[in-house]
Amino acid sequence: MPGKRTDVISWDEFFMRVAVAASLRSKDPNTQVGACIADTNHRILSVGYNGTPSALNDDEFPWGTDEDPLHDKHNYVIHAEANAILNYRGSLKDMTGATVYVTLFPCHECAKTLVQAGIGEVVYLDDKYDGTEDNLISKNILQRCGIAYRQIALSE
Ligand SMILES: O=c1ccn([C@H]2C[C@H](O)[C@@H](COP(=O)(O)O)O2)c(=O)[nH]1
Ligand SMILES: [Zn+2]
Image (cartoon, rainbow, N blue to C red; front, side, top):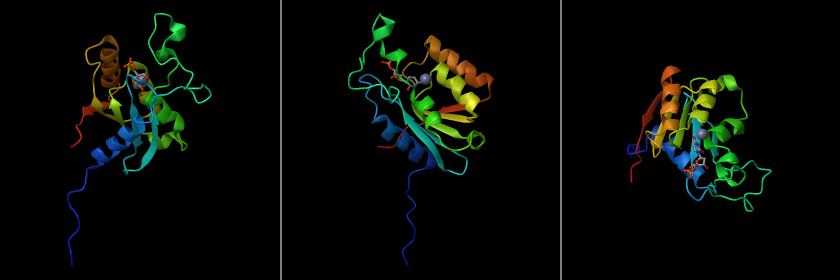
């Protein structure tokens, strides 16, 4: 009788690949972000990516940054982590202690939202804004709230 396959991907890699797949839906030309929330039983609770509110037509949307806040994408886009929480259809109490897998280290607004949603751990791929003011605030929030964060890399 043949033995079982053992060279399977880890749960971390599986959930991060789901987050990466979600990021491929993003219309942002500069930064595509995906998030996948998984509970302690390895069940996916929700998935999200950065995009405009669904009632805003993202084909007509100005996807650049602009001095004029009215034309700056940052003021219109819902972040991947926020969308993952908003897309969740279960009870928030079941999100307590869950892990968010996110392709980019969360901004400080997302850090606050994740804490308030009861997320217990942040696993991220990229930290391209490492050291910026927003990034330092985000890490400060997570540390002070006792939310562990760690970076992983995906195998080729
Ligand atoms: O926590 C985060 C931080 C950022 N995003 C999204 C928001 C924007 O669509 C891009 C960032 O664009 P830049 O051109 O790199 O400033 O990433 C997110 O989803 N979650
Ligand atoms: Zn954010």
